[in-house]
Amino acid sequence: MFERYTEHALRAIFFARYEASQVGSPLIETEHLLLGILREQKELMRHLLPNVNSESVRREIEARIKPGCEKVSTSVDLPLAEDVKSALKYVLEEADRLNHRHIGTAHLLLGLASDRTFASADVLTIFGEKGGGTRRSGSGTRRAASPHRGLHCCPSRRARPTQHS
Image (cartoon, rainbow, N blue to C red):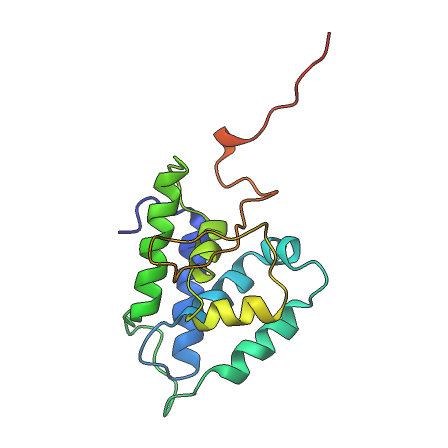
């Protein structure tokens, strides 16, 4: 399932598992994945939310997370919540649509913002995530701000400067 994911994306997922285990969550939720991205790719978050302190985002997410009974050992393999599975499915579809071979943290962030019902999308909206427009699926329930604007998820897709003679 994760063979196309970059090292940073895999680490973000690993950190999401860690964040979930620290609050005793039995599942990895979208807000845990957002915390994982925040931990792994601070520069991505700074680029998308330039006027927002990453600690403010972390505090907002932590205030929303309902703690479990006790911490879960990090050796326990926590399953993905249905929202995370949906977000990752969207990420894969979006990467395919864009002809990106690899899936990076910007793709993960796009997935977390892809549905208004995700807790992660709500947090991103609160902090003014304005990545460059919205995309809607056929059902009209998905709304995703594009983190691709100004970011290069795939080095081969980077715009090359043109030379004028």
